[in-house]
Length: 201
Image 1 (cartoon, rainbow, N blue to C red):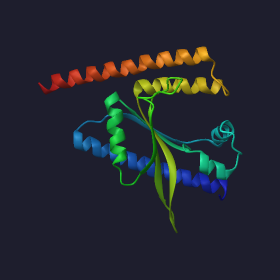
Image 2 (image 1 turned 180 degrees about the horizontal axis):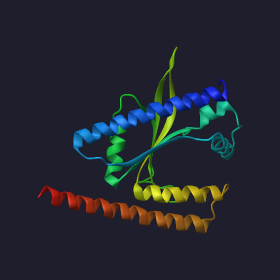
Image 3 (image 1 turned 90 degrees about the horizontal axis):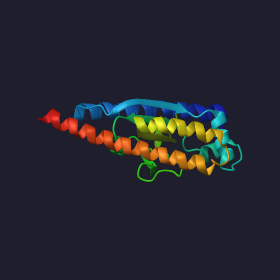
């Protein structure tokens, strides 16, 4: 691995390429179906501090080679959608992209984490076209509903307050609240289906 500056430049290019590809896929979806399922899209590159903390948590030495090999979400895009069904529509759209290669996926909606975290994660390879070569940079795409995003943002804050292990009683309460979020998403999706039926009449 070369310099830290070169690595972060590649991350910057990957973020830009991924943002463009996601925007095109969403615009195409809107054109095809006449409906925009996306509330907002956020993208980021993990800070050096966050990356080093993650390496430490995984018991890896803090080297650039380990960053490249073991940090799979240095580049991240979060797509927040309106309804539960929209999550899977967007996942399907991304999987059909000819410019992104899916290298991993985790459906935390069907199989939540032990804290109750719910979201859909896709790990993709993003092509970067440099002057003398084309390389691929791994990035993570998170797709979730507004309700899931609300819960995940609180989950993230709680996780960082317990760098080692979350106490069992806190973990249990977090999981219970995630079930409420999951049920709310189902109810809102059913309500949306009902509204759509009225619109078609």
